[in-house]
Length: 337
Image: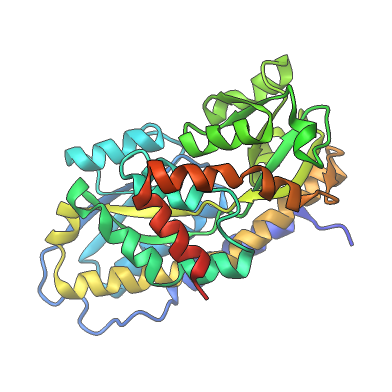
């Protein structure tokens, strides 16, 4: 049955906002006499994106459960700059919080690069288990000395290749193709292993790049088809990475909160993560419906995943010698049960 996009958006948005407000964090005298704080949180997505909807619910929950002693004002649409810009602002004391990709955090602390290694997660269940557990907590704390710490994570799906003209089923299909990647050394190394040519550019440049032939394709989760579905005609489910989004908070800001405020913010953040898993799935389905039924995108699912995994083996070998701190976390992830 064909999904109604408008109905999905309306129902999903209402559900997320309601669940955010009725989250189960403790409300008992949440202010506790603590000094009121007003926090700024930035992200680079639109206001109708599921991320913004969930972060709004999170902010509402924090305000309610702290009896108004902690308020969070959200700045969407990249109005505060790129993800790297926002992390730098957090370090400089000009911003309190941001939602950024774990790959961006790898530019500030290399240990985060472990989450960008191709096929480090076996499947979605393994990914969820790792990100909900002690390994993620370890990563959150690693950057306190760098001026910020992780608060929670948000699902960002699996990343695969999408192209203008060429379906990708094996690494050989990437030969000679210019593929946009994030500004991440791991992503660039992956493209070298797979035989494609990595082209680093901002997300906002992808549409024109595809349209004008500057690039042949890109790699991202399926929701990128919301923006690029009318210029990219093949989405190929090789699912090479599952890179979470991370909500980070300035160390100085965190230390200004009372113990009770910290507990409430952490609890509301954790609940937002769990709520967002359903929100993300609904968002993916909404985007895929339009991509297939309106824009005519072909979904390529007969992908030789084993061939992609084998082609990426040298990345693991390289990390073992060049970045042992990253490789140590990769090993923890792969041994996680």
